[in-house]
Image 1 (cartoon, rainbow, N blue to C red):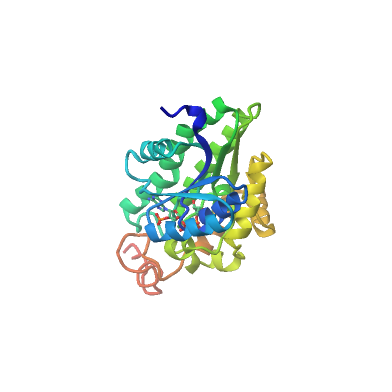
Image 2 (cartoon, rainbow, N blue to C red):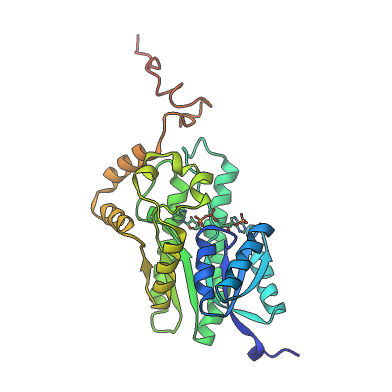
Length: 291
Ligand SMILES: NC(=O)c1ccc[n+]([C@@H]2O[C@H](COP(=O)([O-])OP(=O)(O)OC[C@H]3O[C@@H](n4cnc5c(N)ncnc54)[C@H](OP(=O)(O)O)[C@@H]3O)[C@@H](O)[C@H]2O)c1
């Protein structure tokens, strides 16, 4: 029979098939231990495993859709079958959607809340008690500079990242006297598929802000986590953006972000099904004057 003491510690990265998760998995591999890579894409996971191996880590891949109801239990089962325990959890799976909340798909928006909030919470709560009992390890959660302000035309994405930062920072405080760390990473735009898939890269805001490389973000995030930091905001521009959001009143931030994230070619927020330009933004679309 396998004793719990025969189990090996693992860094578990969810959202490891590409982007920031993959870059963090590579950095973590330099510590030469087991790295469990979790995502849906088998090809992405195979590439990630090769990178982890090349960096000195021992890769394990688990093809899993985290949005299935019992995903966290399935992941726990996989670790157990491989005589591993979750020493460090990296929550990097997430997606964004740009557009007016009334014009975006209802299902896609709920799916985003599910992945960015429910799944991250489920995994954190599932693995954290074991870490506390073993007095080692921790959780590295991916938030965003979006967490510092409400964000019209990416309303639910900003709100979901606000949840991640609030939850993570509070956990960091609760665990301050333990040997377990919870670190929140809040990057600005990072050059990954996220920007194209979310539609964010078509908005002026994401054209203005410089894009960081995922490798840079991963190095900062891992260093911050290993030194027990509560919050890591990688790069000067993201730090400045966080500062601006902290000092400007909400009404100003709403206007600023609203203007910089909306495009006149987007579906009209009035729900007409036309673009804003053809509909409410048209010079001819006038509110009828009372006769
Ligand atoms: N890129 C940015 O500008 C930026 C800035 C700030 C914060 N962030 C945050 O950083 C995190 C990582 O973003 P990224 O830029 O690395 O995005 P990305 O390149 O799109 O990678 C997302 C990862 O999540 C995985 N994933 C998505 N849905 C999944 C599901 N249902 N089950 C399992 N895995 C799933 C994807 O793998 P599969 O598709 O193979 O499943 C992929 O590995 C996200 O939480 C994002 O909000 C990103």
